[in-house]
Amino acid sequence: MKQKVVALPTLGLIAGTRVTLGAGIGLLVASRLSPNARRAAGWTLLAIGALSTIPLALEVFGSDEPDASLPGTPWPTHHAPDGPQVTAP
Image (tube, rainbow, N blue to C red):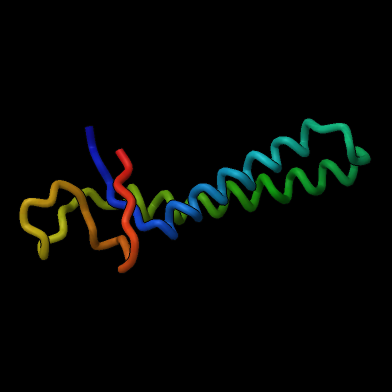
């Protein structure tokens, strides 16, 4: 199984994009707003969630080359900024 080191702020951004994407989908299928308002809000949130996921996914999954400064490390660490680290399987 591959493992990635993901900085805590990056993990928060990933979770935020998932929430935004889910909220957009929820608004598209909800019946609390008028159809036009619901459609506009839903498509906007869905687009923001989907588009903001792309650069985050590229940052996390973009490179499989190990960092030369850390011999023996099986996953790249050069994408993670300094700060708290979370290991994600």
